[in-house]
Image: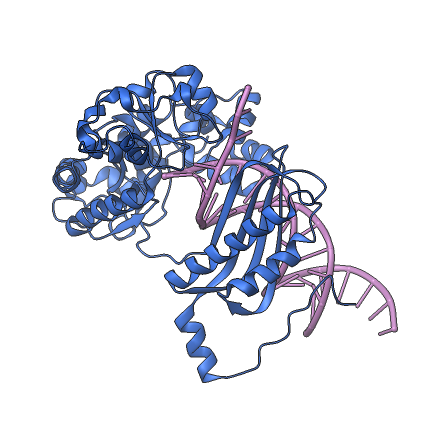
Length: 437
DNA sequence: TCTGGGGTCCTACATCGT
DNA sequence: TCTGACGATGTAGGACCC
């Protein structure tokens, strides 16, 4: 190998403005200690959905609780028996248990006492019920979770403005230029943020601070729940390389299985492989990416603003439906999905020009079809019409488990309207694949 | 055994215009 | 008129993430 591991790591982590001459110089210059380092934090709320429920039902603290399934709110169900009592005074034995759960669905989150039994996110409810039959099961309250999500992100932005939203319970934060962001490698600022979030929401989170997003993401897992992990560039090999390949954000079950089959179990073993070998086995893009990731290299910036690419609605039926025998039911669901997507677009101020459908057959195979039209729309009837044309292009001789509608190629409604006002034109007709020609 | 919903990004391939 | 290269665009599917 031409360069030492230390050379690779040190050269990668210096900020462009601070490291023009790279590793050789930074290794010699004694003021390296005063140099401002790139410090990126990854913050992850602990068992977020479950923790939000425990704010409402504090009597369930310390008990195994999972969130998932069920469309009816539990407080409605138990109100039938405990009509006049405040929610916090309803005894734990009144809550539904996993072993009594009937229906489809997966676990969204599990509290730490529930995780002891081996249940966790994305696990089927039936399997979870076998592992932890006496765990309490609650449905997710998305409205409340969204409210708390906005609250904790507001706390962070007040302290450190460069925040990248990574979903409902996660963010990246650029500590580099935040006052105090360099102190103790970021630990001081991380503690401040944890304290602020707890005061605002009564919820805990875990934070990893590292030279880049890739390592910060891993670091936030090191010390869960309610932990802080600080990783410096010189720690990377010792902390990353013994870990399983799956710990790299971006290596999922497929890539993991492939690596295992090739005899690679840990991140260090990926790092030891030649790039050419990785490219040969995983393709050019993934091979190079995997090599960089294993060496802890990642120069992606913290992105504070982004536009959505698509919006969709999908639903899994209570029972598998047949396109012909359940035509009326499917038609009603289909229309409703189109209306929901249109509502979402209008509420958020977007229009789109690629309309598509997704369906999942009873054997879990997925089929998608798209159609791009000549203009932007957020009209539910038009979405329904184009989606209907897409639906005619998929085989419908097998039972369906799921149906979805998607609108892509989005643009802001106001921008499209402004362009249309500046250059009015007649919308071109939309070809109908099945009724014409 | 059972596997939700809402996304993003990547790849492969077909088609079309130059 | 035919052919090939090439880029842009659309489509379908897959992997992955929260």
